Length: 114
Length: 112
Image (tube, rainbow over all chains, first blue to last red; front, side, top):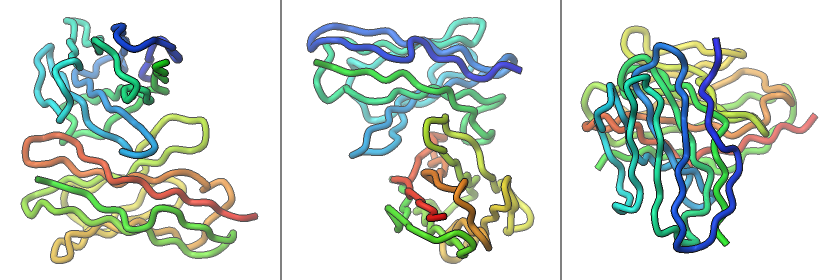
């Protein structure tokens, strides 16, 4: 069974640009969550999608947005990039909602802002 | 707001030493509790989980954790660590809204 797939693995962008990250969950999983991981802040919850609906959102500015498609694949978009957005962005999927089911993580997309 | 505290940021042990990593959470209701591990260069993976029942749960690779409701704790233990246990360990608890909140992580270094 294939794991969670995130693309691309690495991205380099400059301030002011926008970026879209993609996540393909494990087949059959309906919940997809996104996290930002940095050395200083650790793992911070961005949002969770379940059956194409945003179920939860973390404390991030509106520049961070996401969506989920009918096949459960998810995308995350960050607009007007800032230096502080440099981080590892992790996607996780689960059968049910993230609070009731263990999550399976992808390898992440490392985003560097110059 | 719900929070998760991991008291040890970096733990250094010799092989065969016993391990206990602390995790405390602030939410007082019914909780599900998780420990995740991130080995160097690998993705986060589930180590063990507690949903209900026996408060002593066993996970992969000889790890176990004990849920103590009165202390709001879910400490991770292993009687004898190996060099291959070198990794970062994260405790996670969903908050009332269902968001999964992670602790800051504990980096474990095991000396051969």
